[in-house]
Length: 407
Image (cartoon, rainbow, N blue to C red):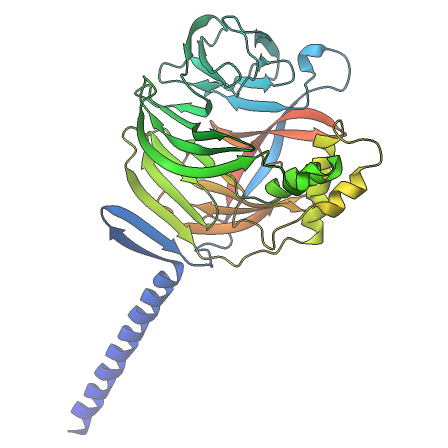
């Protein structure tokens, strides 16, 4: 009898331990993320803690293009946009001269595409070079409301006029457009309009709306009293304001984010249907003195030509800052479908990065010292623009994922 009671007690203890283990495992899983489906949309809610805190992406410089003096084919203006194709060719749009300089995978100059003007293959406000489903280059020019298609060799193919303001254009496999346009424009004492982010068909008819942001400017107010106040008002409106990010993946899924909260939405770019919402818990980050210094240095570089001598101190004393930064600044996609989110780029030379896997699960957070404002990933390499001693350079990096034990 005692033996049976002893065996029964052992069985109960084993069952209790097994239940406790399963319960703890479930709690840990729930601590990372939860999934629910609402009206056909998958909502993935990630906790503040990453699944794999040891994971990070390590970068090593592989190529640098640029020079301070000498060959003009390797000298750049101050406003650059970059892209690269799967063959490693690099396309540098220089907005100062409205041209695209192209380089091979070894960084050797190939040719210049475009030029200033309004004729075929000419630009007033050139965009980054992107690639359509046929592999041709397309460049959007909101200055003349035209999307120009060219071959990789730089031959002009066609120009398509947009019937209204069309910016930040992506073209999907159907030839439909994802873009920002202007709507509900009102001209009175001031000016009001909506920025409308949406999907448009090949005739520019709207199919789906992703976001609408009311705008207003030129309404008088305190900005009318002095140049310093007007400049400060403009800076205040942009200081740590959330900015829209969107990226089209190889499956024609559109990743779209406006960081008033930590959220990224995933749409079908073919019909505009919302597929998934990725969220993460976060602690709001206060705008610190270091953040303000970084912002003021950046604005000083941008507005130096507009500020009368000696006005900088007065202007920055009038700038009004929000209490907190947005939850993140921007994001891009790795080739494996992971989401590379720049959380904070103003950390004394370091950038704070969040990584999510293709399913939207929060994997890791780490710091890196490479510039991330224009970072793209192509064919196992990372490309970006860096400012070194006040000169612009195109950088390419090899990278590897370290500490990856995620599924």
